[in-house]
Length: 244
Image 1: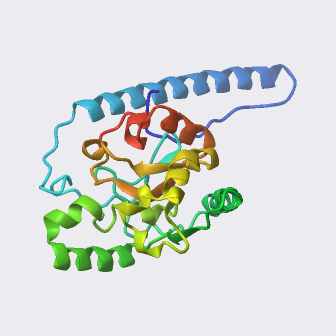
Image 2 (image 1 turned 180 degrees about the horizontal axis):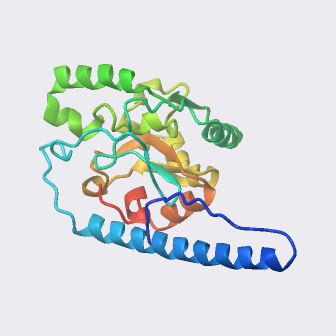
Image 3 (image 1 turned 30 degrees about the vertical axis):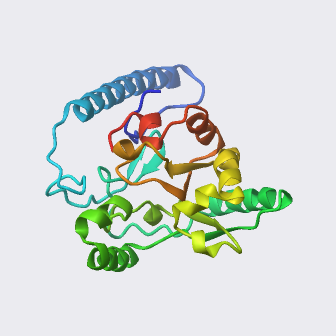
């Protein structure tokens, strides 16, 4: 599937009856067509630039001297947060209501199969990520921290769409890849896409996502896209054809 940056266009079109209105409608349609063609060309140019650009990255995989943007990045209407696409520091949507509703459906389905799931970490503000990242760097060093923790402004949790999920009663596996070996972890990996979630950082995809495997970290993208990614054993980066 071809990816393109979301572009907002203001489309002026007339409506009504009469000869004078027909002239206005024709002019409007011509303008709309020109605008659409220009948008398509802009998307193509942006895509080609994206594929051909050469950037310098530091040891953590972040683009050197990259500043946080003023606006969040949406590609094919999907909000992106990664080492390549950071968020504004003041981007603070809170937890997504749609994602929470989807999780509650997922949780109910899991309960029917004998698993009590918990979303132990969801939305996280920029300021909170500053604290967490600093703690990880102090504990493990910057290079190690960059493999499992996002720098402030780069965290998916800041989007409000990331849900860290574990099983009640197995809290020792919260934010631990031991979760993948549990029956609940296996159930979640197999069924999350049905409710619109994808495992954001799957095993074997570290070079694509930029992060170590996290069996507990799921991202809400909607049922159709989640199913596509799951069936193709893919990632969000591969689905959108973007770099990490």
